[in-house]
Length: 312
Image (tube, rainbow, N blue to C red; front, top):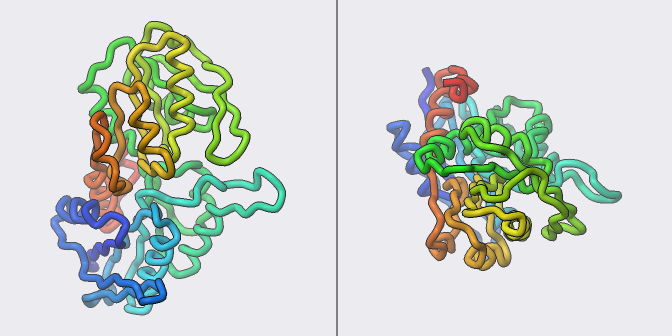
């Protein structure tokens, strides 16, 4: 069997070390630096000929730099005769533009998929895409993990009484329903209208939340505008304690400052993104999905079913 090699981009090296600890491997040697004009330089520091290579890189802030770094890592592996190359992208950026929603706009999620595939990757491993259909933008295998697999076990230990799981928009209703079913909770939905990018206007709460604790679940929190409006709408409808779970802590702009002011008992994020200001929040729990990715990588390497990971 071919040798397994795991290389880290610069987006989240600590996460890659956790993944490698799970696998019992050491991160591959790699040199990453910038030229004086800002161009990215990549060099693999060890032989990978015939190896099963996994390149771990979230396309988080600075997004374009991290994407370029990933593309150069893929090309370096191609030119070094890697046996198979898997792009491990815990957080897949540019995913919000997944369709042509208005005239004269790109489908950015498809553009990124084309770039990754054209450079020469053999498969993609990612988690909680903003839209499931992005998997179909690739003509190569895509393994799609779910952060809820880790969160559900944690939430059960909290044993929150009278719980209602809330989706902050219609697009996340399947995710909320999945979690609600496994926590034996009721389900509610926020009906909202978004007049422009990063601006959300809550219209109505569908479902009974009066006198109940609420858990709002989403794939990511960016500027925290949607989640803030959702929580206040739920409070106005008589909700008690509010909890938040989101896989990806994007938290750009005023995101962190808004979270500080929100009337939330506890928030949960995964470590798919390394955010430098998360420690400013005293009511946040970071749950590691490194073991989930490590097990998926192990199964891919041994040609075992990744789907079975969610059926056990």
